[in-house]
Length: 436
Image (cartoon, rainbow, N blue to C red):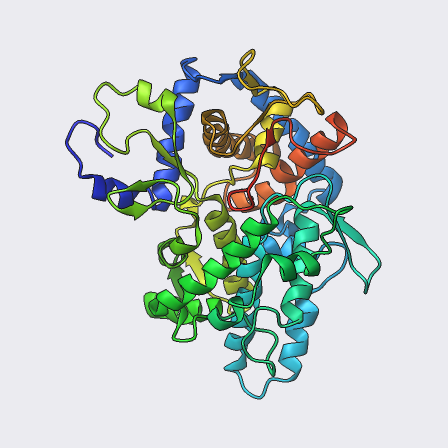
């Protein structure tokens, strides 16, 4: 975006909902950090090597030198926590297939599941857990939410068709309430979950969004119908179907936009996970409307990573333009940077929780905006350092693999060391179930 010319706010709004805008705007925050001009954080780039080495140790511990075996970061991992669940489901569906077209139906069902599961995957808090009756295993946080969502999906809670439980559609989502969501997730006074109302309303709003975007989700408002839209946007390269990542991103950003609470709008466009950053605004001589806004679209990015894996593994499609995808600006990746000293909060930048003694803020707070923006760019830098340490290039170790095997896992593991009682992040975020 050229700040030297007058740009209509409507054009800025469109730009802020694109993939390239995320890295570009976050890059501006990072440039300010290098000049010591952030309002809430100090940046210590010399600590990045320590983070990379910590991550490499984890990777070698878990994968030896077989880095090609690292799965990409996506919801699939959480849904298979402790036991495989997705592959057996697909195999069960395949066993009842009568023709090759059913492979698309398998993909549709898996996309249906992944979409609702990702939207349920906002921070659940430190106190909640889910016990799976079939395995006897107990899960918390993202894994617990993931495993619970599989069983909700199998029960048919999201389907309008009693004969076909393995489906998500607009009419089925109208049945979702905070009460039946809480019951399915085993929420109680002794097992409380953060943001249960926000989670349920997100799914109800999902139904409305699906219904209002038949060009992406078909007449019945089904997430899995997105594959028909993508097929129209694709081209064949020999026998390989190539789908531009921009098409998938457009369908998710535009098609699911109505589900997000209306917080910030620009030129009449609801922007979603996009937030003002005062330190960015202060750095611009004559800021135009929207110049201080930083896009993240974290849940959309997480969903995109998750659906890419479905399209590649089940349909064998190839997604082009994946280099535009960014790392996820959430508390595990960001927590790694804080816990290992790349980012330090300035003195008294945030109030401290009287119980935990940790700094805390709403996800909309400017300090959290700075933290998330720094996380996006730092994940690129840490990934490069990891590749250098291992003698690999991006085609051999993707950002999605780094997120899976190194930074997200690293953030969780260092949190357990630093805060063994909760394993929570170094900065507590008061979640409403719709951002993180």
